[in-house]
Amino acid sequence: HSLLVAIKIRVNDDNLFGEKRRGHICHCDNCRKVAGGIFGANLIIEDEKVEFLNGKENLRRYEDLDTLSGTPLGRFFCQTCGVPIMSVTPNYKGKVVLKLGIVRVHPI
Image (cartoon, rainbow, N blue to C red; front, side, top):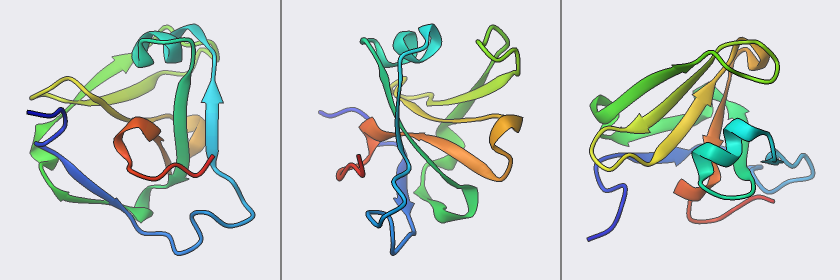
């Protein structure tokens, strides 16, 4: 049995691996805690390019108020397995911070 079978996501971007890299490694305390390691690996992408193929109803949101910027951060995770999926913040209006651990190919 593997993690994250309840939610399937597709990133619709023909230029995902183009010149504009959107992969982001973050070493802040919160990203390290969420990732369970020394950094968090994220993909910052326009929200309309992220398509939920199934399982969107399995998303749960945690409102993180203790952020380095002081801006609240909505953290979404799978209610079935607990895997972090993405974050949203007013600092990245119109974008989501997708957790790279859930995608098969990484644009870093």
